[in-house]
Each structure stands twice: as C-alpha cells, then as structure tokens.
Length: 204
View 1 (spheres, rainbow, N blue to C red):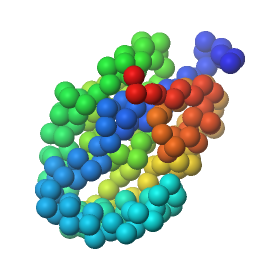
View 2 (view 1 turned 45 degrees about the vertical axis):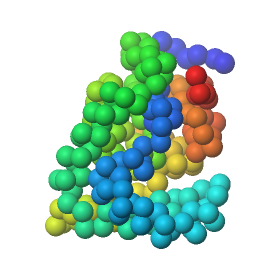
View 3 (view 1 turned 120 degrees about the horizontal axis):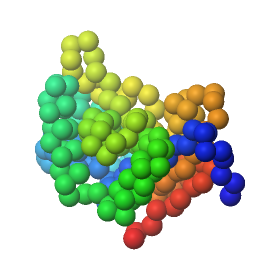
C-alpha cells in the first residue's frame, strides 16, 4: 500500500449498520416510528418478495422500497424527525461498537474527513454523524411531499452495493483523495474495492 503526500485530501468512509453500530437499524427504526403491529403486517405482506430477494441486490432494494411504501406513506415528516432524534440518542448510548468509534476518533485526530456511506436512513444518521464528528452522510433519504408528509418513496436509490461508490465519488468530486473505507458485508464490497485502503470489520 502506498500512502500519498501529507497535503493530499484523506477521507475515511464508514458503513454504519454492523460497522459503526452493533446492529442493523432500519427495522428497529421503523418499529419505533410506526409500531410493531403495523411493521409486522407490512413485512408479512411482502414476505414472498423478501424470500425471492435472497442475495440479489436489485430485489433487496425493491423489497426495502416496498416496506417503506407500506409503512410510511402519508406519515408526518415532523413526527419522523422527532422519533429519529430519540432513536439516534438510543443508538449512540447503546448500540455503537467501541472499537470502531475509537477508529473514527483516530481518523478525526489525524485531520481526515469522515463520511458515513450507508443504506440506513438519513433521518437518524444525520444526528448520529454530528455527534461523532462526521463531515457528511451519504445514505438513504425518505422523500417528503409538499404537504410535509412522506410520499412512501426514496429520494434516490438505496445506498447499497455499487450505489455506495457512486454516491462517494459524487461527493468527492474531481480532485484527488486517498480513501479509507470500512464495511462488514456484501453490500460494502464495492466500496471496499474502490478504496485505496479497505478494511473489513469483523465481529470483534
């Protein structure tokens, strides 16, 4: 591995679920927002689609969109923000990996730019990122209509797989940068391959 000059931009890109956090957070957030019964009904309704999805990225993305449509269409955006803020506080207090948070702090102390690149929702990632000193969040965003309610759609594609690379490169712009990347799953494979130095985060 060849490190660049001291003056060059250095970026550390982190996945969130099971990388910085100890768990997946999408389903717990939806449960906190709409309640267990409504979420359970939505998951049961799309369960055949979930089974067919398997490891297919496109089908997994479509299944996620289907869950969002069934649970969040017409939901008040202000209510989402309020629940997301409480959810973020709980994640920071109870569901972060100390070893990875320590690594985040190391990059921050080195003067590196920190960015979260995640399929989780910006609703709760934005406040978490602010607490941890991240410069940006590139994540899945829920679309809000002119009436202040969720449309049930995503603003842009689910930030998983190749979409992580597209979003990161868009954010980086045309200038040179040395990129560290951290991830834990197949959804991070493209991001780790694109990085100058990719780190697979294990259970410990």
